[in-house]
Image (cartoon, rainbow, N blue to C red; front, side, top):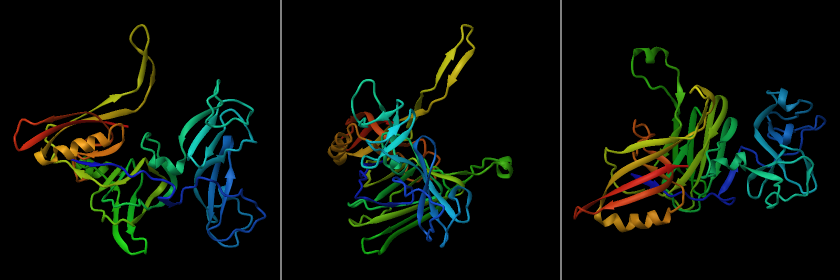
Length: 356
């Protein structure tokens, strides 16, 4: 079982992304755009769609209806302004904190986003689309049409990367030093099909692999990693991107338990029939027993203290193609632990974890 305490990604470490946060200037039909130039188109309730010019001398081609001239990069929202008036339901972003807020009232002007007033004027809606994949307290994905490329410089030695909650057909990871020397390269076709019989082989549709974990990252202190996800059609999604240095605790025993709590609600009529059902997510929990060397007890106690109330990656199986990998992977936190020290040489660590 390996644990990855995540490196917290800050503005200084997030070098670039094709997903927009602060929108470019609004599209002007009279402007001539160069190859690679960006413009934006405003929608309803603060939504803004960012586009990139695919050709030089691009004039008079409306981005939303000219796919040969413009590539959609993604959606964002207008930047909050104290002097602007916002309607009920209109959304804005705080580009410094990388957060989205929704207006709770009509005629909302001059109200600070974080002000504690009654009744409240703004509702925190979550991270911006660009930063959602780094938010370890939510399961909101970063979404991009077609492809998503971003570059991270963790600023410290790391040997592990997790991509979790992916919707993509191809993945590419390239690691370089600050001087541009390639130190790591990995690519994977994420299309998969679980075939159990002849009928599956002939007729079962393909799906895509949702999680990739790599424990073979060279630990350079000045490394930077460029990740590219792409789809053949539709949107790329990525719920969590985590980098860090894994700690190997020991092998997990085969009596591991994977369970979960369902947060859907059901309202029944007087006769027992269902009146209303609201589907909500399952929250997985894992129960692992880990064989550990006596010499590791102190180190693991310290690690558990460091991770108190902190989200980390807990992987019961190293190989992400193993059938037990997904059930034994938790991006979450420790809820209970117990050391069994009965054996004079080997100890047992019972570890309970819960997904965020």
